[in-house]
Image (cartoon, rainbow, N blue to C red; front, side):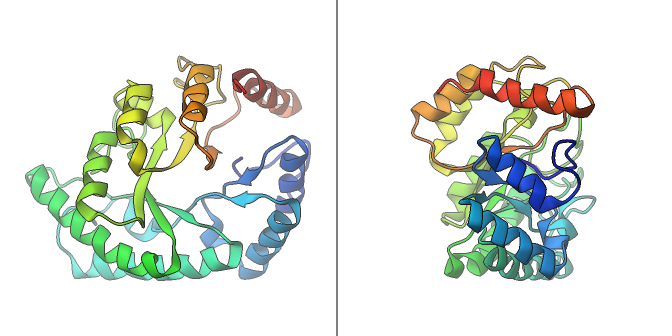
Length: 264
């Protein structure tokens, strides 16, 4: 479940978490958690613990994620910024009992061979892994589609992320498999999930086109969810999408969509 205003529970985040739990959700995702005041982080953490819910991802490296060739070209400034973001994320993760944090690998350099950029990204990820490994934390790299939402970024495909994971060779570096993004970028969802399975740390959900709840686009989420379940997945599947319809009826439509797509 992703944080957002709710007609059923209002704009108080704890009330939203409680409402989500009442509907059967067992985890909570909040991309902007690192930017919340400490008091609010602690309040959210207490609610999740009380309700027996898992904390999903938050974004760890907004400072080097977008608009910069931060993982593509050697830069002391970008490296220091990335590592500082990760050190801060460790403290947030400790506070809210999070394990996974999203990282985005910045922009591609159009004037440099891609393999050179991959080599630089590998070095950055190795340094980041040194920060996370002692705390048993995981940065999940998110490939982002270049056709609809994020043109020009270094990391777009799951096979590319898989190669980077293997090159780094750390339990602290895994893949965030965003099903919406990958349907746009390359499709072939179930075979790619199988091929990358041992390096996938997290899934996110959204249908295409529209980036709304399952059943509003072209993805057969009942089959995709069934396959992930059959592989023994016990982690989080984060709802990173909008509602196809406004108002309370739209929220009820989202709940109905997940019940319809849940093969088990």
